[in-house]
Image (cartoon, rainbow, N blue to C red; front, side):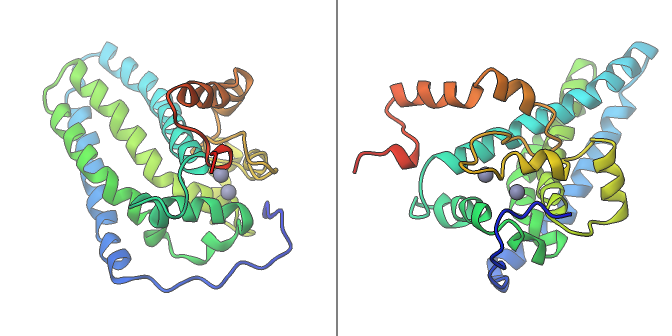
Length: 235
Ligand SMILES: [Zn+2]
Ligand SMILES: [Zn+2]
């Protein structure tokens, strides 16, 4: 069942612009770099201890991805406006629009859904791949970031699947295992005023971050530095 809080049908999906079509080329490139980088990390596992650290690193990286998506989501929901240079139209507008029309995103194919994130994360993944070649602890650190970056990019799909009436069977299985964002958990964010449960890779970090009022604390600190949430700005 979809977690749509509004009876309004979503606007019809806009056709992809030439730039958006170009960005989809980064999807296979990002996935290839991720795969090559993870293989490089695994090639540097030389002992049982390395493998134990590797196994522990997997859920840690998945939680890191959750935090990365939470910070990104919170920042785009909270600061700036659709008129903000560069980020306004490309990132802030879709995030704000998503609260009004949660199912708008399900009209898009998978590649365009993750194209922007893949393009942005490709240079980071290349750096992580290089670090992976250094061996030792560097390979483990690189692995953490490579999986976290992969999760952050794939999160756009996890998010989309959480809004679909009939997501792919494997996505449903991953949701049931709580390895990716579940419908029920993401419903929490779609309750107005959309101020909790920002983490959307798997939602693992939301109970902790919401309980300690992490996002409000961040807003308080940034407010002291002169950066205020968009709805609190003095005109
Ligand atoms: Zn939001
Ligand atoms: Zn959503």
